[in-house]
Image (cartoon, rainbow, N blue to C red):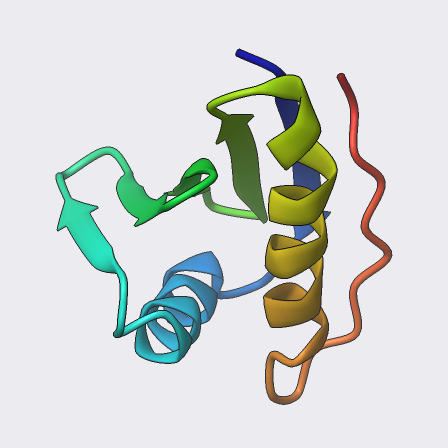
Length: 91
C-alpha cells in the first residue's frame, strides 16, 4: 500500500482537524486520543495534531488510487478557512 505524509505548520492543528472532519462528514471517521482516521474508498487519511504542526498521512489501498486520494486530501487542506498551507508530500 503506497503511503505519503506531510507536516504542516499550524498554531491550532486540533482546530484544523475539526474543520477537516466537518468537510469529510460523509466518510467514516475514527477518533482516538492520538489521531483521527478518515476512511475513503481509495484508502485512509490519518491526522495527528502536534503543538506546532498538523501531521497528515495518506495510505492508499493500491498504487492507482494513491494520487487520487492525495489530491482529495490536498483539496480539503487547501479549502481550510483562515489558513495558507504549502503542502509537500513525502513518500
